[in-house]
Image (cartoon, rainbow, N blue to C red; front, side, top):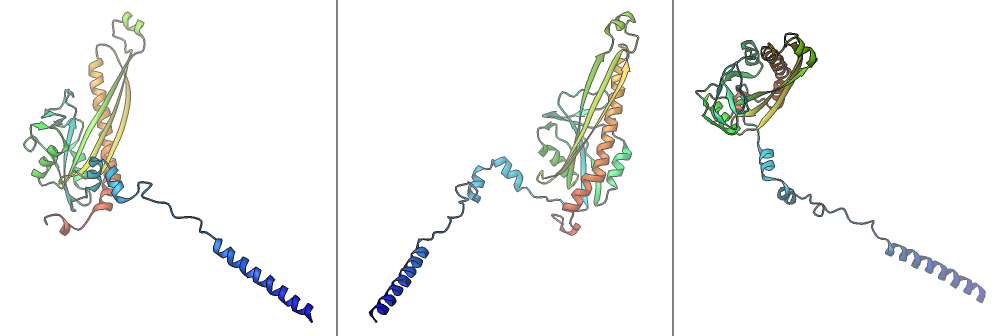
Length: 264
């Protein structure tokens, strides 16, 4: 019977060793690791604010303040060195305001005034404008004087390319032969901003390009005529984009009942 007792004792030792081994395995298990630290990655709100430029932060914090239907003031600006032959400029500083129209047509402004959720569309004139023009604040203050909720600012960037296609022939014909190739490229750009705080609602632009031939004697007249055609076409395209894309997007994203307009 002793061998039976020894067999039982051996089995008990095997079971005990297995239990100890199993227990040791559970005790030795470790989790894969901790989650990544956003703080070490510089992704906490405090670290984000500390690394954000104050100018950018101020721009991001601006909120739309205009109510709808909205009254929009409109103004054209050009660089201080702009020297047109067909329009009149006003003001000094970082830019100048164009106070007369040449390539813009009354019917185009009428179309904009009739857009949905547009309460009015008012061009700014010199009576509302300050003489010194250094930032969009000067224009927004003028827009505020006519009680406009928004301000549409636009400008033209026009380039000329003048090439002599046959210099020798030009000399032989004393400049009478149309050997000059004139190419005019113009981009009309516009931005729609909030009168109260300068919040940008949207922007649009359009480009037109045309080429014509001229001789030396009529080059200036041809260039001026071509500029007029190209800028007129570019402005027409920009107005179309504002009607069909930019303004509908603004209305869809920002329009609220008139009763919620600030100060209403």
